[in-house]
Image 1: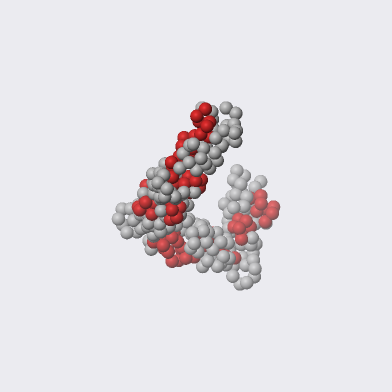
Image 2 (image 1 turned 90 degrees about the vertical axis):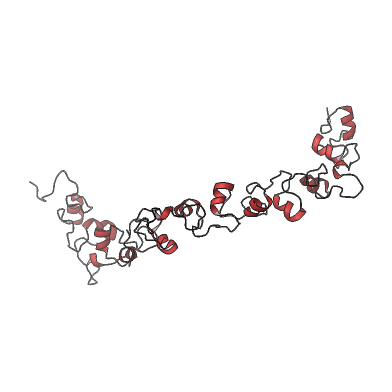
Length: 324
């Protein structure tokens, strides 16, 4: 005998979100009626979502039946959200797209439960506030290109890619204002379109690419020990030439080791190129010590074995190791 007139092979006879056993034993609701109290809310929504009483039409006694309440103050009744729009009656912006559920339904005819109603690759609010496109039509201008694939700022990146992948400004061709448009940065130079100086060398990416012809993703293009920005802004050396003054010493060595001027061949004006000087009087030129033997040009006996570096070279011993 089936007392409750339910179907023994269907757990939720009335498809209200509560199984028949719950309805009968726990909530005392009618397992054959989707909305026991006829307040336009399914029993399951009342129990599991809104926590209203599925046996009482007006749970809070304010004169408004539960289904007509607007719990999240979004301009849609809880019943409409639950039954028609399938949005969350507790959350004013169900899909988190920046538009309230009420605005989506009443003003824009968009889906409050889906971030991108027309599936054009753009968030509904972005279409309205940023591009002025129609969030319910994939191709607003009817040119055969969906709105997300348009390139509003003509930087060779689609609107959708700028927003979703690169996080650049889709209405500004050069997001970081470094002199390179965002598409150039990503596709040609592999620089960061959100950072004006990708390699942090003191020169903007645009300066490097367009003026100095240095590598905007390598801080020291000529590998001389000085960053490109230091060469250009401080020493006026050539960031593309390791030895700007052709004196036999790299610019970085002149600045950081020897203390000579990297833009002047003969820093002390004695008629000898800086690289040919023998600062420590060990019989080896500074350039030989640095470029050939790897010894210290300011220390006559690099390995402190009692023989000058020049003597060691003459004896064919290693000037950097005391026991050779």
